[in-house]
Length: 287
Image (tube, rainbow, N blue to C red; front, side):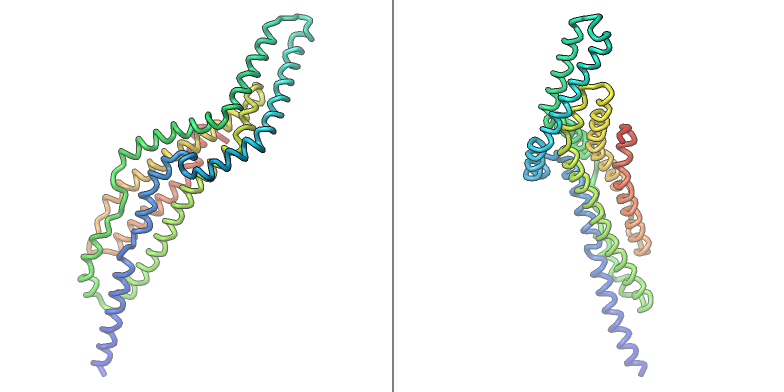
């Protein structure tokens, strides 16, 4: 009877050892792939990220939004002219320079709205240069899981109870790592979709620069564009910090502590990536 129980225990232990090694092998592949793509994807301009989407957004903006912006610009120009007349006592104190001032301001406003996409893309060109420059200073961001393969002998010496606990923990960690890799994907691609949405409405805030009071809309919009652009730089800083922390992890005899430590750093990375958008807006005072 003891022999039968011993054989069952050995069979179960072999199954658990194989299952544990399957969970551990490729444990960090999904996270490594997403983190490794951050620098290239964050440092890409909207036009290069997806030319098809960019072309569609630009076409819709110029066809649908630009006429509305033209109406707003016309209203603001008329309002400015009325204000100039009123401010000079209904032309009782006539000075010809006020009309040249109005023509100049209107010309600047028309020029801005006519070159909306050139200006908005210039913001992201600057941001791309900053991100690419910072990306070259960040070292390897991959988690080295090669040491895990050398722990099989240690795992094979464990009893069924500890092996079962190890299997459940590695299964949970593997699932969480996959979820975190998905979160990183959502953050990076969500930022780019937000950029496309922002640029699609660009003509409207640009049409408000012809008036001092209404130009606050355009100024805040421009700050928001800058925040979205430099959010990429903050993302690269987060990845750089993550790379430094990960390089300090060594898979010792306590493999579970090491794996949970790596997962803790990955949780920290996801949390800080989610905060980059609000932090960039806070720094640039964008609402």
